[in-house]
Image (cartoon, rainbow, N blue to C red; front, side):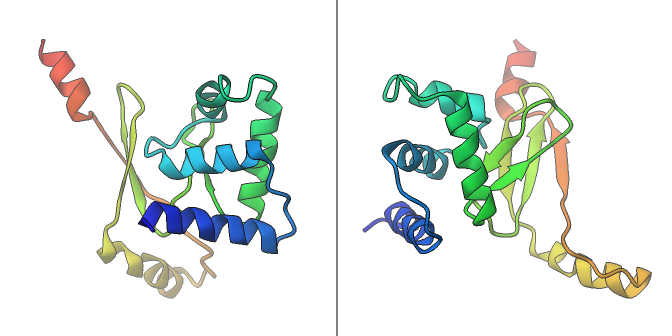
Length: 147
């Protein structure tokens, strides 16, 4: 069994143990998220699955995403634009975002793991979490700008 197949089986087990019925649409949305590395919006998920599920609505996508959010299978990423993006990687990691095309790429930087502890010590806050974004221009957009 591949790593992605294992992750899918674990996610399905989490849904079952949470009492969530696994419909074909729900399975397809979850599978799409797990295989997508581009942090899709609900509309992008809908467009990717509409041929396979012509009767599925955007509302169905949102409802499934809410279920996945509630049980911790996905994270919602909001970056000031109008559309939330969804990330199936719920481990602690950061994102770099292209200013031109909006592409989002994951990266991990272990040195930042201590930031919450330091923030608590310096401010007296009880820190719940942190988020960091790095912005720039992706290689593809850099190449397009050169031509």
